[in-house]
Length: 489
Picture 1 (cartoon, rainbow, N blue to C red):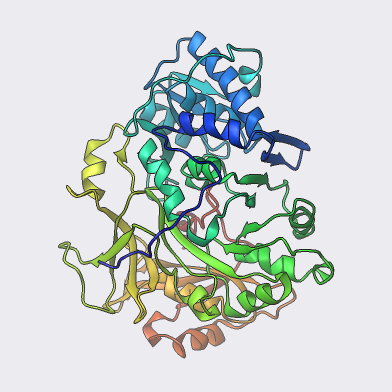
Picture 2 (cartoon, rainbow, N blue to C red):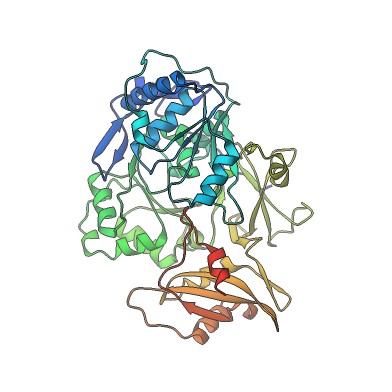
């Protein structure tokens, strides 16, 4: 097993808590007037004390309408303060909170509703308004009671609901590492139905973190303005967003002295971008690897060199360990590719009401077998090479698309890339690369891109076909939709 680094968390809220409701009670007292949320679009702000007050009132209304401990409450609201109030209210009444991303289609939404049968669906913020019994106590909740259900993106089928108890949520504090310090102000652009919010509720409350909700629609200028005006200490974005932001002429004069660390998420950031971000923004860049079923797995360190930030997803987080295993579940030799198996306190308890699917990914020790493939470098950093479902076989050789995508995005003309395997009746599977050009860049020939890849990887990994597209299709969770690309091959 590859061990994690030790944790020494210092929290903003002191005490011992068995449930999120108990923690929230303490936060309301100890952090009452400190901001918990900033909703940039509306200008609305909410302190920890107000969050507690509004959530308690909404919880009282839920209880008055028949919601009992263990019931599922689904929240189908856009990212907002109202979503945060609804989520906390459900937990305070002892219910299980789940989110429905408002960008999902009717088939996915119907699958989620059928999968958890919520007693209440909150799709209108007016359901949260009105007075409740503010003196009521939260429902008694045990540390191992279900707290939240977080739905997978559905890229390989209909969404599955990973469920977590209160002990899982508490573990997020110990595994946060460099990403969280007490009283951080974090720019948040993830859907609130995502693990990046639902699994981090305890962390936010315990650390006194202010979440600044990204304005929509996103622009580089609006992101820079919010970073400055809201005194953001932790900035999160995808590499293409950071690339556009550092091109702004006004970045050099912007006061970003409060910015402590930046997160590059969902895709690799080229080394030159990492260096430029460090230089212009004056803070280190980190990379995190996680999944719905385990919201904390590995991460890079702020003092890692750019090559480590780009080529790897770092080492296991505190109290977390990983193995790379073959199809039989045996650990593969050092340096070889295997499926990532995770053991740690943030691993889900299972898929909600789906014992068969749970048995496929969780063993009797609670270890999670992911669909991600990777290998370890000599220093113990995890290098992801793709998903088992993404791998294709060209001429008898396994090709892992993520490796090829990383090399393609190093090309000066390429801003983004996705590679899929496509069936060809004569030669079997081939690689098809979809590439997005960098602004103002010349269009490289397919042959030059093949040569670029072949000079850096095995020649059989070079894509057989290259298609230039304006943008890569994304799922509602912001991931590249490989299924849509495969469909047009």
